[in-house]
Length: 76
Image 1 (cartoon, rainbow, N blue to C red):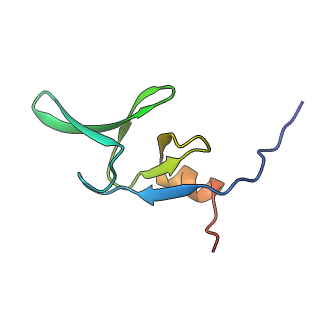
Image 2: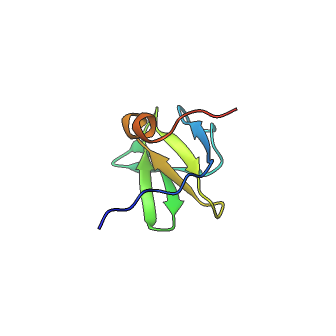
């Protein structure tokens, strides 16, 4: 069986640095800064350039730029 994703308008912000998005949490791993988002599926790392998507229930999750470009198009 095949399925098509229902069309839905999402909110998204491209993340570049600490402080760009309130859902991004900063931490350290081996004294190096790391960033992540608490998602419904667990913590997910984010790196500069990732898109932060707000889901239909207000949840947040990251999306890599190439996947975002293939999946979404801008609406006015």
